[in-house]
Length: 247
Length: 247
Image 1 (tube, each protein chain N blue to C red):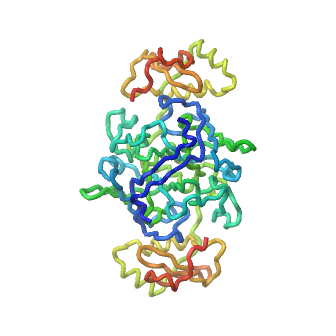
Image 2: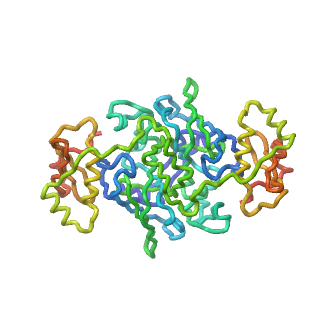
């Protein structure tokens, strides 16, 4: 029963549908971008309304998932967390890096709605930092009396990253946002994402154009005079775009 | 990349050594029994001091583990949480029951010490609700700005169970505790465990003797006139003991 040498086969109980189609641009922790909405679709055999009975009484939900876009067994004993500027190394177990043994991720999200109908069971959540297609291994209600420790000491990451950049939009970008009325929080989402300054720590020159995929388009933007400017929402022909996160 | 149908093989990165040798008696959530100490031993290839570099700066640690004492695939869409008296059913994803798909557990523990020497890497933790031998799949630092939500709504489990029982010790029990000076917090541990009244919700008659395994002995106790009395710390010959948790 020691389990020392066993291997455990895990099958997804759900899959994430989110605006994030690549790693670049995803907030470093959940909760930083409240407008980041996602849906968790339960998969058979967990896709029964009974499995989520009573869940709507909880405001927050743990999502245990696999960082499926990271290669397996690509972890190193130390990582360079972005909070330390990308230079200093800490142990992988002292970090929330996705490059880790077993590639398990843990995200606390706000639970907005439980939708259970004849066809499917879906959880609408927000504040998510989850890549589209993420396999979900487990869902658990948040228990504040056991899991809220406001005065916990948190090593090198004690405080939330503050929004650093003002964000403005080109006329083209505003028109492209207005052409997507099915995404009513899109402008808010882009503002919250870029305010966090998702430029890689090692690559921050002003004027350089960055692009990352959101929904079905590439968000193209640059930083000029300390402000982020959204250039456009381009069709996803990546050939003309500069690279995203080089890490 | 959807991951819908994939299966993921997970190998333990560590194993728990704790006082809890069976499920009966283990607190329902971490943090309720601060004197419950445990050690997490890292396993190869994660047993390198580098993997925990910087971890000592964090006061709290997430342990992602497997409920290995629960049979695989023994889950049902609904469970009867003890907080509801064992009668009402809620969805498995609205509960922290160990009988769940993939059997993944999540515990927040206090990190007391990181011990890395030539032979092994070990984390001493407390407030643990972890069975001895538990396979650990991941360790993550607690990030209070993202994970402390004191005002989260928590459905049927909003508040911590309060200690309900005064605890007294028979002379025999006190002598047996005194004979174990290598366990300096043993009396405190027993008091904290029994104060929570670990009797099964459906089986609480006064005077009935319960026994559960702690370390290398069986703790035998009963409740009389609303007080728990520790009878003795018996050698683990279970044949004469009443059954533990019948669930």
